[in-house]
Length: 235
Image (tube, rainbow, N blue to C red; front, side, top):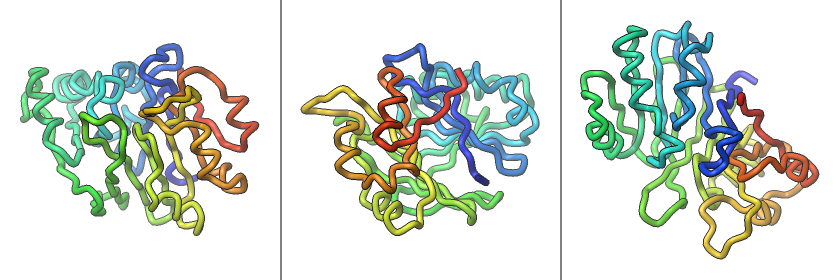
């Protein structure tokens, strides 16, 4: 897999034993970080792929603490200690306002504003397309479609449903893998994709390309029994 995600954890916000579900991958000398929650900085600051990179790109799905909680620390460390700059990519400038409140000067990092539903190209050949997803009613959240011209993958962030474009990509074979936050706690008002919902949505023959993450507790055996894969968190 040319764009294999390495997970820094696999847990939900209320499951600290499995740490925050944030991920990373490297293309050339560019280190991509998908979200940067409370535990993420401690997982990457001495990681070989990070140390050998020239640039860090932090793609943020939304502003809950388990997705941005250590972003300020990462930016400061890169600027003052590591001598490299972080590019923060997000469709909304609310991330800049949050960093302002944390006392992170705008000169310490670069902000790249993405456009929801539009493809943005990075110089290393990776493209990213933010998709609006439903998570909580008081925050605009995004999932990301990635491509490196060899593979195409989807990372949900936090989302209670799977976008139609992602489902169609699974069915027509244009999407190689889906990383989807999953919950096994039934609710009339879910904020993450319920396992029962995914079972109805994804035919069994396609579930091997769906990697469940952001788990409320470790029910990996049940997920595999249902035909899904599970991310391997480094915790």
